[in-house]
Image 1 (tube, rainbow, N blue to C red):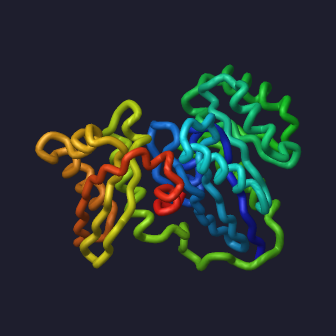
Image 2: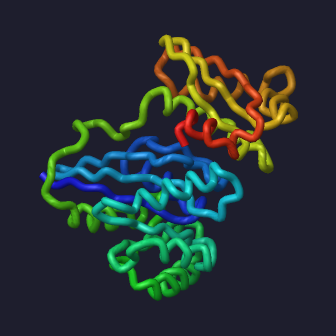
Image 3: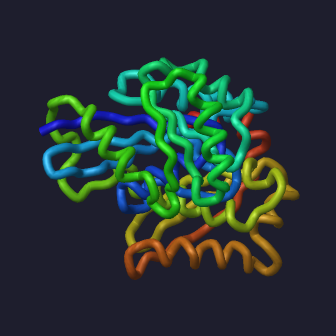
Length: 279
């Protein structure tokens, strides 16, 4: 038996969560088209015939403007320690730039893999240009992939699998995530809110499950301003109702989820609030 850990790291919206979900064959991380969707370290498990890889999905590295931003950056950078392989993801649709170079400078890039993702959305010439630019980093390996279509993913997975050392299975067969159920439901609520909220509001929202008496689940939605509360609820509560319905469709039959919106002024800047929320 061989087993090990692989961390995905990169700038926001490069597709780290989508790639983890693709490899694990299940929804391990929530996804959205908004940057900084992932806020905490998320683990997904891939099971091979005689091996197991634990993939660590991390928040996108960015220039923080809040204490929350500083915390999620620290989480991502800490996640590259004590793992067997680090994969730095790059977006094939965007020019290789200073942000990517900054991420690479924080890694032991000579022993890392560079993964150019979203090749299904970029013309061949741009993908080749990205690979050429990234080659200057001096990484151990380079892989063009599409987390959405699966192109190139088997080759990446095979290369990672070959590097796993002898070791025990860390998780039982069939288990694809170590996420706590209540934490997962809170993330599903936040995912649906990200889909419907605009501008800066999505980044002012946090979610946490405060009561769990199956089938009844109570989830609290935190916002930073009184004016934001009505925007989350929607006219006549319709928006909150749609969010709840979308979450229930992803839970076991019979689940009843109650959503409550609370104003917690400037929670992103308050250490005690961030710790309570698990950041």
